[in-house]
Amino acid sequence: MGSCATQGEKAAIIKELREEGYQLKHLLKGLNMSKSTYYYELSKVDAVDLRNEELTEEIKRIFNHHKGRYGVRRVHKELLNLGHNVNHKRVQRIMHSLGLCGKRPKEKYHSFKGEVGKIAPNIIDRDFTATAPLQKWTTDVSQFNFSWGKCYLSPILDMYTNEVISYDLSTSPNLNQVSNMLAKAFKKFNSLEGLIFHSDQGWQYQHQHYRQEGELKK
Image (tube, rainbow, N blue to C red; front, side, top):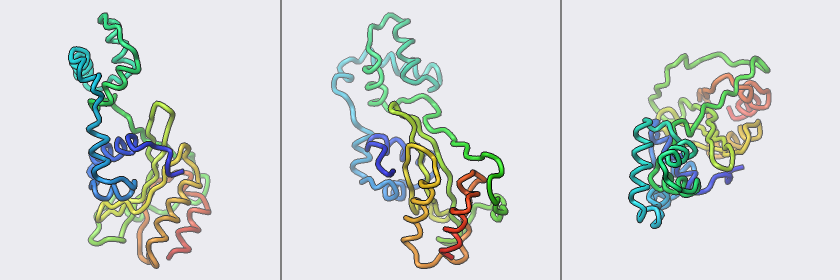
């Protein structure tokens, strides 16, 4: 399902991946978001929150004091302990407007379930360099936690350009998500002969269907 995340949540995902070194233009293209919308989502500020300068500064102080480890729940609890009579949702709005979120908004999704299919040899052997596009692709599944639940992002990235070749967003990590991602990528190219496609040894990538999809496009 490619639309489980709101524009604000997509902006948060892009911001997270930018911090890992991916180029903004490729992330915007991959997640189908305009540059103006991205910056608008980052700059949204609740006018009511701005007027309450004391509370805003206190939230920033608590967040920084705990080195960014406190999310909304723990910041709210700390405010109550300090005598601030404030609603949990108000704290959430202020922290969102300031771009403050507890560390680990993205978690590594551990897809390895043991040997459930055929494990491909590690051809890349930690050599993630490439000299041209379409030489090496990589894919992985990342887990993002939101107030409404979890969302899983499965992208294909070109190791030379850092471009998002295709992606799929889903509320559950499953084989259909990987199949959709592959279909979107393969639709863009007539041939991918010689391409090295790197992934971890997660169960999706050991599955016979995943391997057959790759073989058909050679």
